[in-house]
Length: 239
Length: 215
Image (cartoon, rainbow over all chains, first blue to last red; front, side):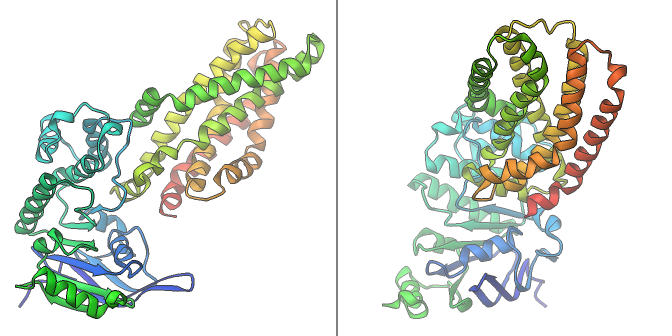
């Protein structure tokens, strides 16, 4: 019998006023699995991530992470989830090292200075540990944001356009990091518009359209062109 | 608190702005009152607290601005654990900032109006300390409440000032008595009111901050 999924979304509905973003969404993501969520602008990709991260409450239906209900038990869910959204969650007037120190303290992690530097080294920012984030490029800020999860080790990573703003080297690092995260049993959900590197990491592809999962398929041997064709078939961008 | 102080130490955005604001305020008071010592003596406690409150409104209103940059607010929300620690940290940072501004204002008042505040200083420190805790406690909570609202600059003082009436009443009355040379014992009833307000406001802040943060 298959193990329970790490993420289970059932009949999920989200409306903002009269605007219906998610209608009746069902999704499972298992340990060691990466799901790429594709969809047009406004399809509900970010909303789905925010519901799973406990930032937004669903209107109806349930979203479970590691067996806990995102709406009813957000504190427990937060212990298992790492979110990298459009904001990088870094303070511009603190150094890279100070940012990491702040977040580990806030998360209640006991981390040695060596571990903090190690986390920065893993995102190739150790040379900039004492530099203020204000001087960083967008890609460096994103890498710093990801360094938090090297220390926190969540079971679920929720990523919104994770490769956006990264240079080729950082993209390669992220690919490797996500592959290693998966192999250690973590689950990944990433929202994307891209048909590039994100898809190489993904084991499954889900296309959101009209508030539901229009297609949920293993990536298998699908090429980027195949995915583009399927995307066009299932979304309003078909034209 | 460490993070907020470090950010402020490096950017000096709030402290510099508050210093010049306090300076301008004193110029306005000086022009309005002129050299008449009697008028000044009657108006001084009110003016002092007007200065504290106006600069406090500016300072507290910016308390959570740093959290809006790069969506750090979301990350605070996502941090597991007791959110009241965030409130206590913010309150401590705000208190320190307000005390610095108040000390500057006191010195500037002395210089501008040629006043000798030193004899009344120990009692004044007690009154100002108690009044500031009450003001900052509820101010920090309301700053968090309004930080994600579009009309926050307007809403923040509109929400805060009515709630501050007991604190303002007690502080102005106690300050007036202390400046006239009365001992603290003579204003014990006002100090008790201030202490009670402080306890209630801090408790409300600690207990409700989680709900405020969750929206």
